[in-house]
Length: 306
Image (cartoon, rainbow, N blue to C red):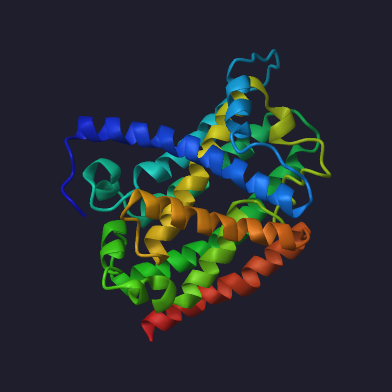
């Protein structure tokens, strides 16, 4: 890792890259929607449609009145995504693109993973909808199930490196492609890849939102600027997860082209799963995550210890 910039200059660069990650995340979602449309025999919306939707929502107002936590939930969601991105290096070796990665490690990233989800759960509790407790129990149960194998995978990589520092993990993979941890510890990589599909809430793990079946949830309970803030947080969070996976298993990111290529491939993997497999019920989803990817994560740790 290179020397860090003065804190004010680094804060300005980080703010710029958070905004860039927001635009990139929205465009990435638009491209994937276009691909899915083609797979299903449709033309699909233009890739910039999510940006237009976000712009329209920002200028709308809402007269709905709920508790204070209902309005803070999208803020928690946004802070969870931004917090992950702030402490990750976007491009290694360029101080302006390393954000505050010198000041954070995997333990801090783990906290931010839960931050947004718990905020949304508390917000749903104040929404007043009679089915909110069902959505909360679904969401938190599945979140715990898919976070377990991903955390196990991170622990395996930290044990293999001997450090929780993200910079040290990236540096340990610089000998060549075969030194990437996706080849050095494929069991941990498999656990993280499957868990990533659950984090992105794509089929077969999208029963919490069930967009084709349940006419309630964040997309209908929230509107106007609150919905725009929630969508922004989810977009930044998705980009942060992709950068984290690239840093843990793909040797980090060293160029802007590498950033686009690696993050797109990782994200497309989860979308491919969603386009092929049917939806799990919530108990099937939890059973699956605890059984297969969690066992792969444990085996990854055992491989390192052996």
